[in-house]
Image (cartoon, rainbow, N blue to C red):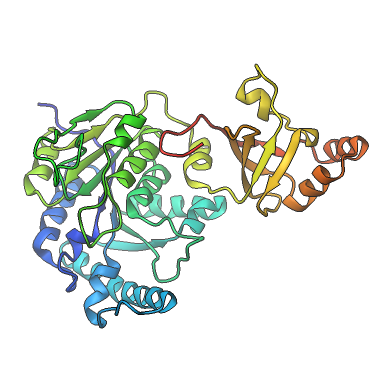
Length: 378
């Protein structure tokens, strides 16, 4: 039996483990999770906790939302629940540890901005250096549709990449990934290992069985895809099963292990691919037989066919070919208004002058060439 050699671990805990009855935080499952964190730290593993549950923890302080409630009022009430529940959740965690913890609340807007992303990394590293447990959650009180990750499975993968973790453990309400939903099919078989995430793996994912959380198995596979591409081993385990945590510490696999890619992405390319969200798209003319890097390197204005969305110079954009193939994500050197003007005025001299003055449409230093990702449409 080989004991784990984790150096830095991210543990993702869902709402159903924090407040299973939506009546505030409960120690029913938290004690086991806390003991696991304590034992990991005692073995020399640095731990980062991504903890959902603020809305579920704060729900009992508000009246039940009537079905006829207007959407805007419903959203405002959930934000208030998150504000009330976040302090209760942090207090519940703090009671279980004899070492300090620190709260970090994030939005996708924080993660997709490179300067703020670097600031988040520095904060996490400094907390770990001082043996303080970072507890991270999405900032549901202030986030909007445009700024939110939407589920803490994917957030945990982004955090694991930002923190240079080597292992991600995602708690679920089932033992791991099954070939079909075990809540509906008695003959469902657990998949102990996944060496490569393919469409067949995504096809196994069903919906969320819990009525408390927001993430189903599909979001967990999406998170695993993000993590393994950064060289991070990812486990999906049953967070309600105390023996699963003991098994992990003994070197056993109680759930599904998604093996880290043997050739992981570099940090900047991973951030560009999996964390930075594109603000617009540039559709370009491609030449048959050319490789992706030949399409995207020194991408000139005369190759632009169409501009979609609004973006400024410095924003992240998606480069697509005419047939819809995702070619690259990169930092734009031109704003959408200027590029639209160029495409609408077919003037070779203007195009040549602009290209000479400002160079390639996209930054050659901040580019991630893309292969079609399994979990996304073309």
